[in-house]
Image (cartoon, rainbow, N blue to C red; front, side, top):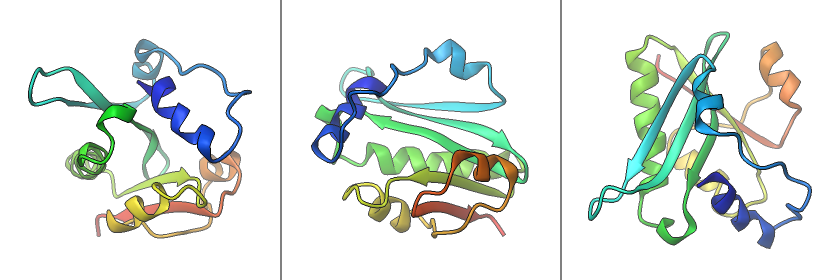
Length: 139
């Protein structure tokens, strides 16, 4: 799903040097959680969110929806489910890093309650600064 979804970025910038997505088992070894969106009609996976625990909260490491299913609310539903799951796990905030110039990224996250911020811990600083990173607090 992730490799297929990443193909959407090819219309915005070069993705030729990108590494293949890690396997789910590799993601599941990290502290955090994975949520999967399924099609109502046949229960096939249409997207997923991978969240890792970081100091002071959770980080939305990856959100992917298969291109044929974009625009139907699955990505937004996954982001909202991430916020709920994180809150239920007692995590005080969720952060993410995204591409500001990609038309479908920053506006989605802004309408989900994320706001631009500067990296405020070593994990986020090590990612490097991108114009839109985000944080939503549960306070």
